[in-house]
Length: 566
Image (tube, rainbow, N blue to C red; front, side, top):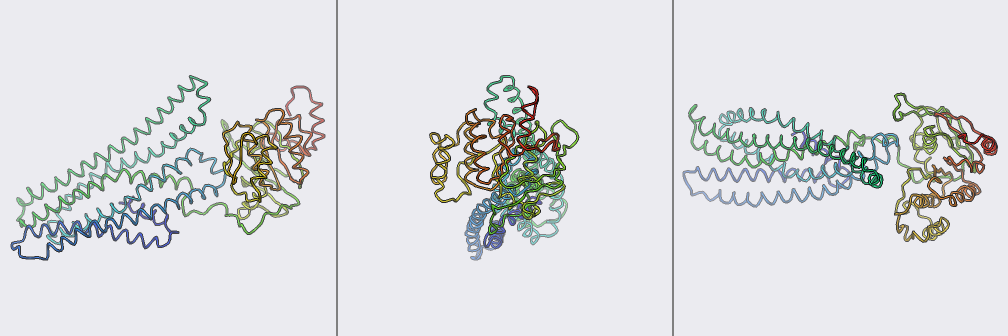
């Protein structure tokens, strides 16, 4: 019962922005209840007619006919309204979750992991929506049960209390396995995240698996274990619910047997009352069976709602970041970008202690070309994310043009940057770009990046992104050019390029951006091109080891013995 009310309240929250949603929900509830009461009324009229001594009354047939019309009519109304409301709520749920994920801090999303996000955006939403569509049926059968008990109380309060005593004993024995069943269903939902992670690895690591037989066999073994474990918990929960449902159905027959065979031997009972109770109890069997069969779906919906809440994307929660005020334009003119005492810590793989980046004190000016260098794990990418505003500093502050960056203006601050990350993603549509003659400008960049024979653009849509890694990086670079923002960051962009295009990137593209007044940050290990930069920032285990002009760094590199790492 608790899960039903929780599901109903969830529908109210999902639909709060839909016009007349609350009125619609009230109508759905009333229509479902009326449909259920009509079913009970029909059975009551039948028992009244069967136990009447006189059959001259003409009122009962007309009442029965009215119930025959009301039952399907109100049931259809309830289901129709709910289907429309659920579909609109589904759109709201997907959009709210999408906005919540995009507004959540990047560090939180990285901790959650893409497999859990994917499972929530696909399976959890569908499970919740499927359960929402069963609300009219639930309301109708609850109304049938309640109205049947009310009618039985009207016939004989004493007999009803005796029957309820037997039912209460049965409900207690029924709830014990149901609680265990819900626990197994909730556990199965947690295991499903691992299964999605395995499927994601299968689609993204197909080439690596094909190249290594033992790895492939090990992976298949992991998938088998994850699938069997998930299946076992799901199977166990479903079987427990099935056993509980069978026991619940048997309880009705037990109560009927006690009523028919036991009660008359204990106390004097009117035959008319016994007949009415017997007919109504038979009527209760169908709604009770339906309600019990719905328990597994309600359990899965409850697990999905809990998963969404545990991820930190509860619909009513406040985001850590505020939406960008679109009326406030991004100014390409800025005088100084500063990091003052900035620190950020996180736990790295195979290390018990947290890795601390900082404190960092740096300042940058427009038109600078800065290389970020250092060994793997030195903190280059973390520093880049702090500069971009993707990470909020744990201590210290970032300032742009003298203005401190916080939750209120971090979104606005990020609008100053274009970036191509090492784990970049290319969208098929040139989203968010509304420059005049966008297609023509994009075609010019495609020619410049030697992609015009492979990719065409029409109405802001790329013909394909099914290219090599290096070519897709060029598409990402094209998108960054089209954004035309004042500050650029490239994370190992040239790592996947051939020697010719690598030279074009360092000796032609980067100097051109600098000439256009752009500030450019480049994370790179290509020490042959360090002389192109204005500054070389070298990090070592989270600290700035050196901040030197490129000429001095290049001379130091040239003078270093062969094999010395920079």
